[in-house]
Image (cartoon, rainbow, N blue to C red):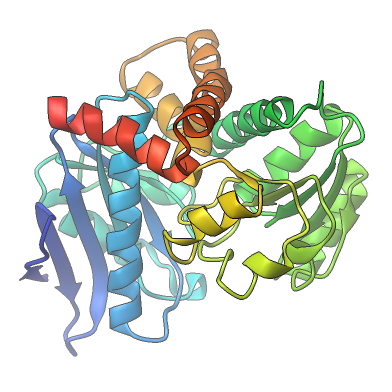
Length: 336
């Protein structure tokens, strides 16, 4: 194992584990541990180049710091990436990633993300500890997102989600769980995924409607719920949006922070992603503390209350919801 230390302003530690030919086998970033050990995903997917992989890892680690702080958790922010296609996944590759994580001496706690699952985390856990390899947090993330969507709908004047037109982008772990929850609430749900078969299968199972992933973000919707990769709300997309609310499970939904102000000008309610998708992290902390599932459920449902308070604060103080959420997180970090 050849671990290269990378100096990045504002980060406690960033490493790249390189293979025999100098290729990046693992990228791990710990952003901030003032509130507690850094919790973060293990993402496995291909990237055009190493720079893109590092950039995404850093952005996700920063987002985790703010997410944990805004949610009132005693956790910090970090992230890790295996820059390869899941077809290349092997036990040795996962163990190699685990050994790189082990160099953080418990300051980074990995959990599954895009391209990895609980079985992968158990493999990683053979060479490092602690890891979150028990229950999948994805349904809990979806539960928190659903609570956040309800809060946004109530803020916009809706009594409930019956008949609400909601577009869910992504039919993976979080997206599929969210679709099921929204269908039970009586919403009119459309779903898209880059894997068309996955979206069609989920639609057939739930009664949702599968649509073209390229058209979903600008469809006429009450709620647009991004639940796949981030950066989907771009400067080109914002003027074409025909939704009233954006609230989903994806991280870093806005391509640039400045777009929050553009959404505010268009009177589109935006639930900051690092707040509305915090249910999974809340659940993981409850597991680490040995709390009951009932207690975890109550805490995750509290995402709706947090979103309601942020929306009210943003309106009263005439700031974006992103600013309101960042202020909440920064105040807690400063106090620490």
